[in-house]
Image 1 (spheres, rainbow, N blue to C red):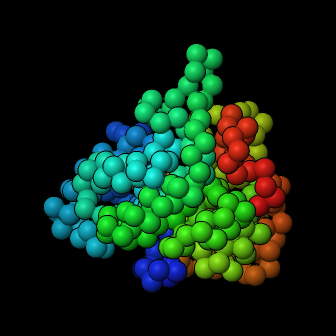
Image 2: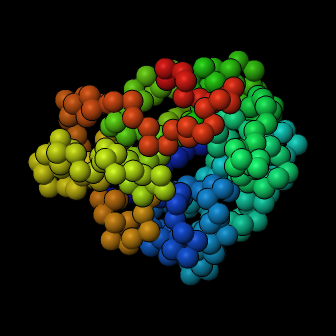
Length: 315
């Protein structure tokens, strides 16, 4: 079944389901993208800092060359990394991403995080104590750069990622182009109900990253909660003859949230898309939202002293 699309506030449309590429090793991501597109995926979510956009670009080139899809059939997202927050750095950063992805435009470009890192010292600038060196560039200045690249036609839509509702309000109060999307961590242990409702009132579409609880995150510790092993999720999965992953993906789709599960395993990539032949009931959605415990798999604790750290706010 074809993947439904969600209309953005600028008139463009985003497929409600896509492939995440965070933590996908460069040697594996090329095949993952090829397998996904051949399986019917039309939305690929990338970011400069993932360090694998060159390989994603190779996959896209191969797919276009083989006539599997045309560029206009795909929705490609990337994100501006924290060391390019000054207004004048946004355009060169995006041009670098386009060069890596071997395309002339993006469908969506996001500010990856609201806080900036020190500029001109690599992607992860640290001092002698290995403490991240930050910059206090205001993300409102970054947003001006985002509006500029949209005007140039380098990206069709622009948005934000990991912004709380207060930071989003601040952009809305000063922008000439409102964000089309806010991409945030979202799964049953962090259901983001308030933020989703807020974004809906502002006509901002929410994309859920780590919808399966990011089991392969590098900082996972023994004893951390595991969504895929949750007996309550498994019970719902059994009812529909589905996997826990498929239930977690469908949970977002049924809430109108765009969802981008990551995998590099062909069988899982194919399985993750088998979510359009069933629907959760409103009661089940409510029940799953009730699993919320405010638990972040990606809390970035080491940056919590930054004035633009987003997770001190309630939502």
